[in-house]
Length: 383
Image (cartoon, rainbow, N blue to C red; front, top):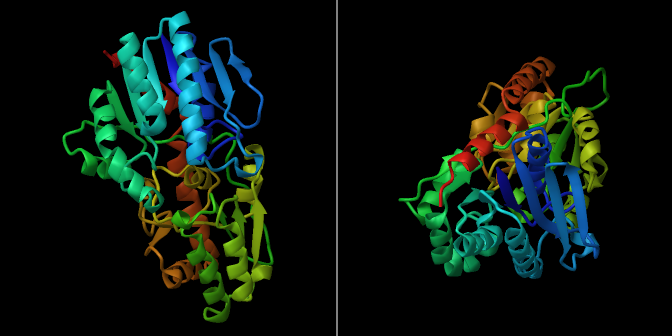
């Protein structure tokens, strides 16, 4: 079985969807009956052919990417990838016989798959990842109004539509209640991300690994740190923020205005293979996001054995049980974040119990399982 895979993100470009694709390809490399060709974007001006394995090939096309914005794809980036990626994929389809096309994101990849599928009479699968679902991001509110009819058509003509969380599926059904949508959650590399001995430390450290954008709600976490110090009496509370994005300067300025710049460490973009060290240096993971699909960083935190403080959004409630391996907090509430963090910071036994439960949940999820489920979908896809 041969699959054409479309995703404009692939490490070092992009975020969770790119990492998910890389992990899937690693698992596909172990499946001798499956051949996969990925058409993606290059992070610089070079066109690359990356042979992940004899049966897995990555074609990375230059799209004029700004090296200072690897985490973020502009409208220009997406349009460039759409045109170049479609032309390149069409050439591959003229050379090879594909059994199915797998598109990460409805737009632009799903639209590309829809056009290619019609032209070559090949079924396509669309994986919903987050911002490609109308209503997911305030940033695209105006755009959603224009593309909603196209989104419905791409979904309707797909052999399968698959969401990465139940929450994202429910949001997608608001665009088309009649659409049949399956759920295949993201996986996690439990051999890479695993707990470490915490030992004795001078301070309890909170970590947030995320793109630094308003949608992630990180400003409320920064404000919570001020409350912890000034109102909760936890003077040694520390916060590490890993990631980069448009809101980075504003968040640094906020920390300075609140007088807690010494308590908040901005680590910037960290290479994926060094992320386990960042999680292991922390005691609590916090993700106060306003919207998520299925957060890869939350999965990594679970595998690292960390207790979780997070908002209920996207796939969060599928990974966290309130009072069992973490606490849920109200959206946009620095006070509630501070309250839940304080409970964990002042109770080492509670942190240990929650962390052990997080690891237990992570061990039930793996990229191997995810890859096998997608392989079943490919085999069932009919034009």
